[in-house]
Length: 80
Figure 1 (tube, rainbow, N blue to C red):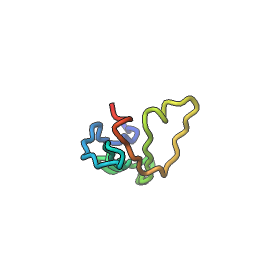
Figure 2 (figure 1 turned 90 degrees about the vertical axis):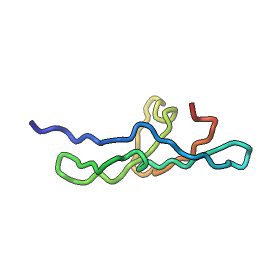
Figure 3 (figure 1 turned 60 degrees about the vertical axis):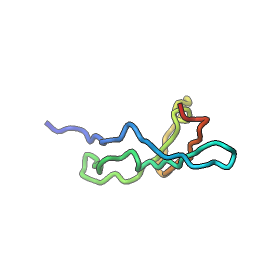
């Protein structure tokens, strides 16, 4: 049977923190850092537009993701 396309994603990412200029650390995280292999839609087209959001942003009622937010900077305050 045919199956819907399913991305293979990396669920855990380890980064090296760099100084944020305020005595703490930060890291630049890219949406593509979590993509382990190419993803194709039901018509065989490559899906090559991604976005990344924090859980806090995505958890807001009415949140609608938009392709094109390629990266975010995370500091020690937002990392659990």
